[in-house]
Length: 81
Image 1 (cartoon, rainbow, N blue to C red):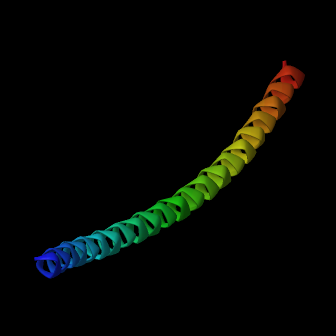
Image 2 (cartoon, rainbow, N blue to C red; image 1 turned 180 degrees about the horizontal axis):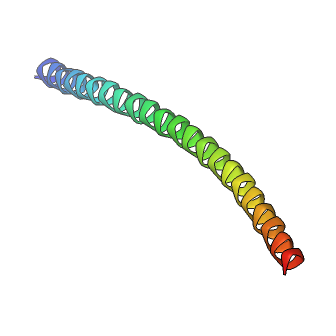
């Protein structure tokens, strides 16, 4: 009887170990997928940020050039009056 109970307990432990190993592998896989997605989104965000910073730089240059042109035209108009 004691031998049968020991075998039964070992069988249960083997099933638990198998389930644990399966769940651990699943969790590790999901974690790796989540990390890959995070890194992908982070890289996309870096690219978007750099693009927007360049857009801001060029638009600021355009604004300053347009502002300078307006000032020149205004000065010319004042001189012509």
